[in-house]
Length: 187
Image (cartoon, rainbow, N blue to C red; front, side):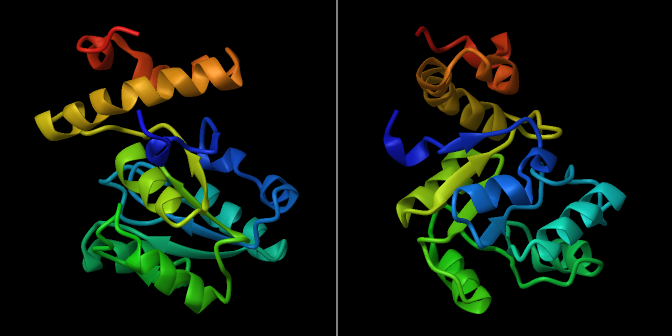
C-alpha cells in the first residue's frame, strides 16, 4: 500500500497523544478529526475526558482545530464546548481545509500534525501535504458495506506498519487485524 496511507504514529486512543509527545516531535498545532477519533458518531458533545485533553493541549501551547468530513451541525455542536477553529465537510483526503486550518492557527506543515482514525481520509490528507500523521483505532466503527470495504483496504498498510515498527503495535492495531477485515487479504 502506498506511503500516502501510512501514518507516522499510531496510538491506542487520542488521550495517548499527549502535549509532551507532540512537543517532542516539534508539533505546535494539531488538526483533529472528531468522529471515531474523539467520540463515536452518536455522542453529540465532548465528555469531560475530551475537554480535559483539550485543556492540556492549550496549557502546553498546542493549538488545535477540527477538520471533519461531517456536516456543519455536527461539527458546530461538538465544538460548542471546546471553541476552537472548526472546518466541516472538509472533503478529506483533499487538503484544502487543512491549509485553511493551519492559516487560522498560524502554523505550517513543519509544526502541524493531523490526528484521525482513518488511513484513507485522515492519514492520506495529512500525508498529501507532508504533515506528520497520527492514527488511532476507531472508537466504534460503522458496520455497513462502505466502512467494512474501507477498513479492508487499510489492512495491508496496518500489517506493514506493525512489521516495520514492532510487535508492540499489534494490540493497538488489533481493530484492523480482526478476521472480518482480513478475509480478502493474505499477507
